[in-house]
Image (tube, rainbow, N blue to C red; front, side, top):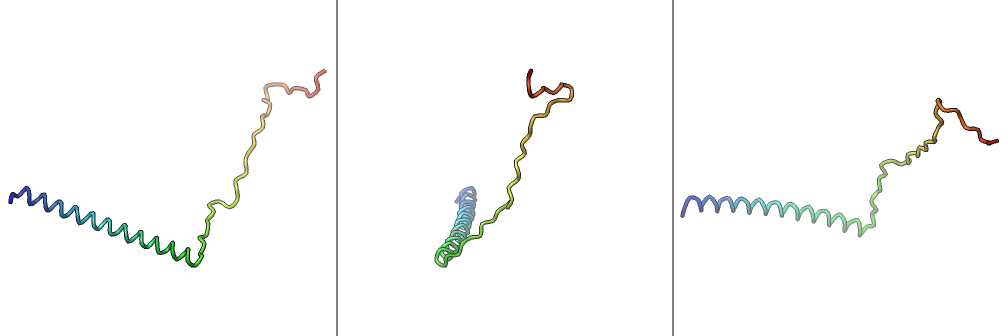
Length: 78
């Protein structure tokens, strides 16, 4: 057996172990989420909805103001 082949097999084994560990962790997290969902569904526990900002911010409406340099127009034209 060549040293290169042995090193390649060792790398492959390490990568396979890492992938297996990752998949096992993901599956365990999935099972935990699923169990929590089933418990919630079974007992009818509702999630509390959080509101970031309870009071809406008021809208600011800007009105046009006449410039001080220009004379104001009269409302009734003669």
